[in-house]
Length: 427
Ligand SMILES: C=C(O[C@@H]1C=C(C(=O)O)C=C[C@H]1O)C(=O)O
Image 1 (cartoon, rainbow, N blue to C red):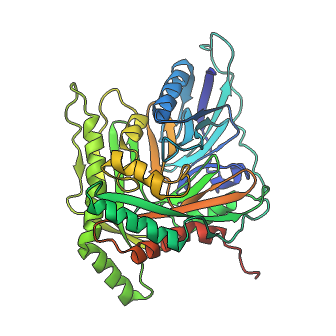
Image 2: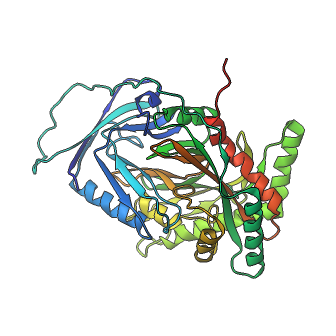
Image 3: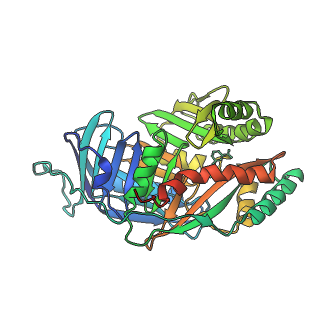
């Protein structure tokens, strides 16, 4: 493992953070224009299999133990940080990744900062870091626009119907009670396209979501798997969805219908129960009460494309844990996997004709102190180095689900990424 030295210093407001990101491989975490952007790379770790999150946590602990951090700003995202994205399934052929950039430029809680990270080979790095003036990273001009029209993939409407029907019959036989079935869409933006265009359009159109870009995985997720800041733990669980109505009356009716839908409430309950149960299991004997509380009733979260049933969970971090322990415990919640998890996961492998890669997996950042924010990587796409784009969207199937409705529900879930990639009409 490299010995790293990280130094965070305040800077004056750098304006649009995305201008500092790498056009072909941006590392981004943004909400309402604020957050962090990384550039360059001092270390990258790849992980796979059942223990991928565990192994990443160990690697990070080793790096942190030998590293040296000077942080004059002390806000979420300052100091030594890594960006990460994990595959949805342990069986995925895609790599799960942690990467440590050379610099992080951020604006968080109204404070702008620059973190410089370097590898130091000196055995004794305890001496003072030479004082050099803060130099902002270069602003990289816009490259070719990233545009493509997404086309249906292997999971055609017919295959989707067959998968949902098979899931319903297995639910009927009692094998599991909820399972999430997704479908794929494909496009091509070309190798040279500037991926920051996608990030920018997502962030502008969906300011309430967390816009992420890590190792080619790009999206705008409304679902916070878990956020740890100090000892405070929060999560936002979503499950239960209806498309927004075309006009005000239809939209109000859709919102009411979602609030009153027994099927959607059941879908939501599976997800919230699975999240709470996973967090409870982390409680240690020394610290038996993490004080978990969840909204007693789901609330309605309105995004430009859909209504969701949403619940926020709050608690206290069990002593000795870090955000990656919680990510490992929580993933996959029943919002993207199913109930019971052990039955639903292999069934997803059987019923979906593709590898989800990092779709619906955890994506986010973590710090040396164990803080971090990780979303469920939804409403986005995998963008390969050659420019191939693979987007996924799915929905929860429970007893009473209608295959046609389930297919229709995935349409608006593709909308954020489809619109971010849509070729713009010439002005
Ligand atoms: C699976 C997706 O979304 C998840 C499934 C939902 C549902 O089934 O209602 C709602 C929000 C997400 O937890 C997706 O966007 O692809």
